[in-house]
Length: 282
Image 1 (cartoon, rainbow, N blue to C red):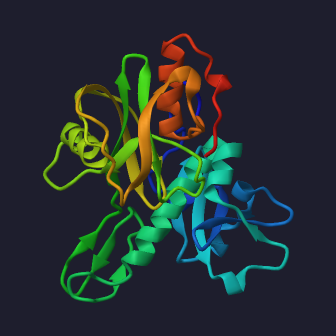
Image 2: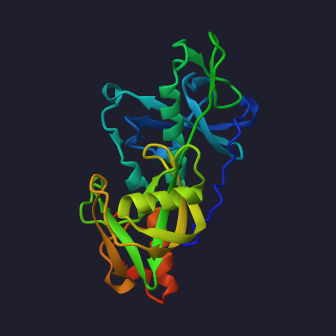
Image 3: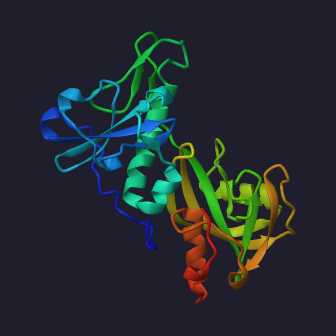
């Protein structure tokens, strides 16, 4: 991800016919993490089309090159091979991270829908699209994403930051975020989530951008909104603390690889401050 944030994915996501893909690369995962061999770059493990496992899932293609993903059990991890956290990959190569993000979500979808949720029958895939069919009852299952809103709330030259119970970096603050409920618009979710988590009202929510987030499978939809009233009262089962911070007195915040960090950097820049001076974690 760069400071412009709106990037072209750069790949064709249509499943190729055999004759249209002459360079086949396999992406290996174990327990949802990319697996690296000792001699080849992760995205450049080349195989012959004839050696492509029937269980491999198409991920993306570019020109005559196509990438497929497979998942192996930890007991089958070859000697000398190692797993890598997706977040680490994001910090080193945003293109590979986007490829890995799509792959891991497709693998998780396939594994969760090997059997029909309606009748329990076994499902099968399709050679032309990502779908699982139940031939017993006729149900079909497509990959799904979970929409979430994430909002930077401003009050003059201050912004609202909160610290969550769930974040691994216990000293890092971030923005208010939450899943969109059934029957809600994105804007309604912004108002509800901010009110639920910190007890304040906001106004003028404005869409800024979005980011795929494979932890486990969200689409993060970013907004900026203005403070409209109320005093901070945190939802204690979600947050440790929350408060208003001036841009020159910010605590540790997410880095620019996440949409939270990107939104914060834009706000800091808009006030004439240097975003590179921020203390960042993940």
